[in-house]
Amino acid sequence: MKKTRQDDLTLPERRTFLKAGAGFMGSMLLGGIPFRAVAQATNLAPADRCFVFVYFSGGWDQLLAFDPRDPTVFTDDRVSETRIVPGYNQLSTDARFSTMPIVPKERAGAGAPTMTFGPAIGDVRPGMANLSDHYDLMTVVRGINMSTLTHEVGYRYFLTGKMPIGSAARGSSTATEIVGQMKPAVPIPSIAQNVESYNDRYGGYANALRVSGLADLVLTLDPPSAARQLDSEIEKSLIDLNGMPITCEEQAFAARGVGTTYENSREQMQSVMANKLSDSFRFNLAANDQVRATYGLNGQSYPYNSANGRAAMVATALKKGISQCVSINLAGGLDTHFGTQLTHASNQRAGFDALNLLVTDLRGTQHPGGGNFMDHTTILVFSEFARTPTINATGGRDHHLSNSCLLMGAGIKHNLVVGRSGDIGMSPGMVDLRTGANDPNGSNIFPEHIIATVLASAKLDYSITRVDPLRFILA
Image 1 (cartoon, rainbow, N blue to C red):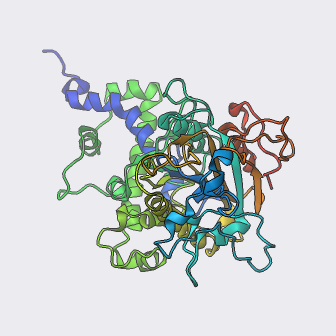
Image 2: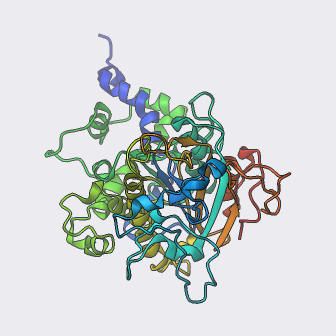
Image 3: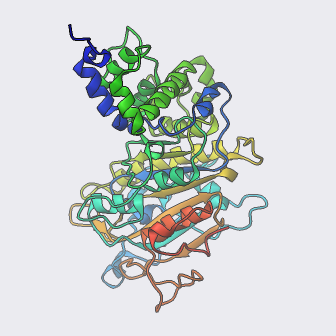
């Protein structure tokens, strides 16, 4: 009688799982970190250097944010000359909005602010805090040449610092590059909430855990139970495989490194689940009362969908030592070719208000390595392009090449504005890339310069960008 081999008894589903294992491990992040780094999940230490990438989806109006104009100078009767319409008068029906550029209130010991902001940056009513209060942590970069008017291209260009081929992204996301080089000893090095992520040269340990929202993140980290239906055949196989003997087929996969990586991944995921990291993001629990109060989530029956809830997720992931990099979509509804300026400004305001809460929280929380969390965190705020400086016939603004971005926190200079857009049509300006001075014989600033600067701010290799960082920004 033929002797039956153990692997002959293995179900086809199990073999399918083994072959899918590498993809699962990469998407779940947990295959490349030493198990001991996760086994201490009850005593997690925040990363010494953290990064937050904040995306405003749809193409923002920079006149309302980081590149404002004085409406008493750029008047309606000069539009044929300047081709710029601030449109701030259309915001007068809402008392939260200024009808003039916002000059930040000077912070004690920070020096006079060097920058102004558009009306969407924050609530100007007496006693209200807004993002401009943190000018002393900021560098604003204006006049960035996006080289595209296509949403997907501009978006992926800013994520990677490389112009896509067609609409297909090239290279790794900046967060992936950071994790790939730094290899932080945290359970989930990178989280991407409703933001794309790419990895073209690192192992699965550098991949982002991609989730569509906070509820998705909680579900991903939740221990499976009989009460919760299994989400996929792979998850079912994960549970069925626990405690089963090693087979010849698994040994064959292990010889190629897949089995070993899977075994680590399984143990790490079990540890993450056993330590109930998902509870950190359940903001309805009594243990998270302070988070709800800080981010204004009290009274929200389901805070996960709000911008404030997403900002709270970022702070939780960094402060509790769960992640090093978080990429987040903090505002949407900005592709406003139609409608009023108030609609666009309100959509931007929701994102900037949530960002203000996040920065206030991080700079008010002590970091174990000394100073506060903003001393250890670099934030990049961006959109795929900007809106035209003129208003179209339907009351909205169209796509525009010249863009701006905001850098905050560790590794960069503060209270600084660099770059410019033109006073005619807000075209991308020329600067001396060595000094940052406006120079008609200089060069444009492109997204790759921003990405190189972010990497250089942490003393990481930026050679993949094929440009030098903006050294006049670096601290």
